Image (cartoon, rainbow, N blue to C red; front, side, top):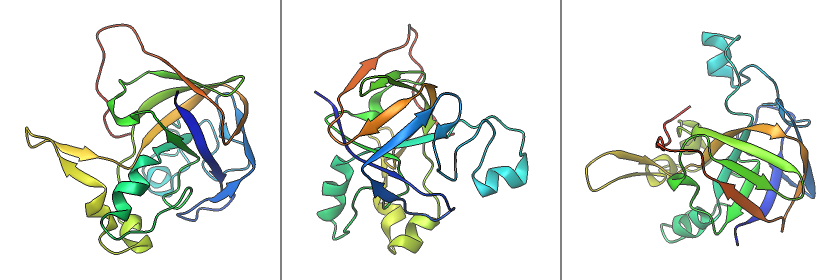
Length: 179
C-alpha cells in the first residue's frame, strides 16, 4: 500500500525543506508554517507575474523511488532536499491524472493539480541534477520527474508511515501538466 516516507516544511524560501516529525495541512492553504502556504501563489517568480493567481502548488509530493534512481547516477538526494513537503513510496505519482484525490493519513485530503516543473535551482543544489530529473518518453515528449503539486481539500496531521489512498477522478482522465 502507498505510504508517506517523510514530511518536510520550511518557513523561508530556501530550496530544500527540513524533515519534520509531522506537518499540519490546512484546507485551502497548504502546509502550516511553510513559505508556500496560502490561497494565492507564493513562489517568487509567480508572485512577480501575478500575485492574485490561485495557489495550485500548496503541497509538493515526490516519489522517494526517485532518490534511488538518482543515486545510481551519483546524486545523493534525501527527503526534503528537492523542496517537497511529502515524500511517498509505492505510488507512481507521475502516472496519476489531474484532479486525483489522495487521502493521506487519518483525515488529510489532497487534490493533485499538476506536475512540478523543474527549475534552475535544482542545478544549484547539485550540478547536472536538473537534467537527471528530466527524461523523454518513447514519443519524444518531455517527462518531468520532480513530483506533483496539490491543493489541500481537507486538513489534518501527516507523519511518516501514514497510508495513502487514491481516488481517481471521473472520466475522461486528463494527464498531468506543469503548474
